[in-house]
Image (cartoon, rainbow, N blue to C red):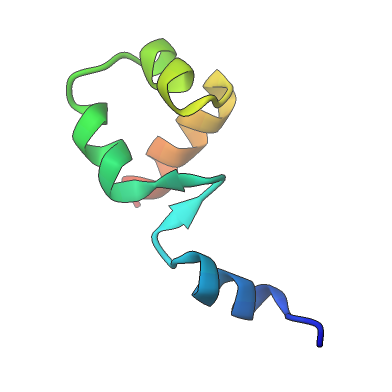
Length: 57
């Protein structure tokens, strides 16, 4: 049986994006630079900026 995008979000956790747990990201964001965050979560700098922008909304 196929799953839709909304169902995948529910099963994967609503507080995750790009494989990053928001709670973990928020804790580490305060003490690390964008480059260190990108290395920690295996993301590009552009993805780190997008996450920060979405969190600040």
